[in-house]
Amino acid sequence: MTAFPDVAKIKYEGPDSKNPLAFRHYNPDEMVEGKSMRDHLRFAVCYWHTFRGTGSDPFGPGCAVRPWEDGTDSLDMALKRVDVAFEFMEKLGVPYYCFHDRDVSPEGANLAETNKNLDAVVKKLAESQQRTGIKLLWGTANLFSNKRFVHGASTSCNADVFAYSAAQVKKALEVTKELGGENYVFWGGREGYMTIWNTDMKRELDHLARFFHMAVDYKKKIGFAGTFLIEPKPHEPTSHQYDFDCANSLAFLRGYGLDKEFKFNVETNHATLAKHTMGHELVYASANGMLGSIDANRGDPLLGWDTDQFPTDLYLTAHTMLVVLGQKGLGSGGLNFDAKVRRESFEPIDLFHAHVGSMDAFAQGLKIAAAIRKDGLISDVVKQRYSSWDSGVGASIEAGKESFESLEAYMLKKGDADKNVSGRQELIENVLNRYLR
Ligand code: XLS
Ligand code: NI
Ligand code: NI
Image (tube, rainbow, N blue to C red; front, side):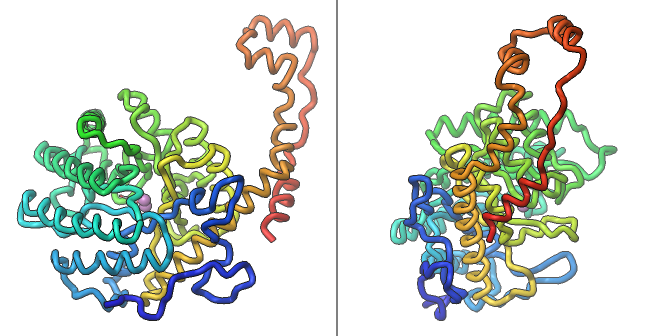
């Protein structure tokens, strides 16, 4: 059985290729700054959108054509779907995938049955990984779809739901470890609130921290060597999510003594929902040593929700890769396409177009970022802009040798600050465009 009979393995054909099912830039073995594109980009396909997405939106049900689906959420279907997923990923040539427990296997009548279902699918996932060489970038638990999570999971007002969530994450950690997962992600789901009037915020935050501490303890106990990643998101589904953005999440982690145990999985559309650019979130996380992985997608400037579109904007991919190169890679992290095809793109082939285009956009972004770094034109402008800190009073302040009194004496003697120089934004933007030809 093949799910994609019309698609052969996607190959690199070079920038002049007109073949929509070929890479024009993603050439896995091509070396950039001494490392292969494959190792720089560490692409992952996400199971939830790509193999469970139906095209439903708040205004209508799913309409995606998926001939291999039998319309059930049965264990049998879950097992068949693994073959579809691995056929897709092998043809695409991605090294990694990511999943939530409930994407890959259905819930049973109780926790024990649910875990049993998961074990059956994990067995097949392990065999498929073995056969294809495709690896697990990260695993996670879905603590938001089932109605028991209506008030959240670890921040629920119902202590039993906290307990259920702990049991579920325990199991998800075990299977992630079993499958050689390189990270484990915590996205808040419904960890937040709809109205402050019914919410004991302090208690909920304490519970969230308690949950993370338990997860860290269990990680150490079972010897899971992957990285723990928090995925910030400011809103949706709740009106105020607790892991709002990178700065807010870092403050939370530090406040509860958890910051050494986690990094961030930064998602483009979450950054923009927080009224940040992706660039802001990436640089903030990276500057604090917290950039662990990326959920690569984009939003729609005219729609106020997490549209999770495939990223094709070269300004975005080039800047993202500039930050990644700047910190010498993502370590155990990667670029996970947490993205879904539009509802209007309902044919199976659209899944290939979407991934091929975004992989190419990131490969091109990587080449652009490397060229920007090589030329140094932009970094020279930035360096020049801060040159007053390289010597004299600037260097002395940075070295911690000055005080309010000494700086007052310095300025009284000098009379006024040196003249400012231009920020050169337009110049930088023009230089940038030279690389995006
Ligand atoms: C939802 C999140 C989710 C996480 C994994 O907005 O992006 O898909 O990546 O739980
Ligand atoms: Ni995500
Ligand atoms: Ni998201």
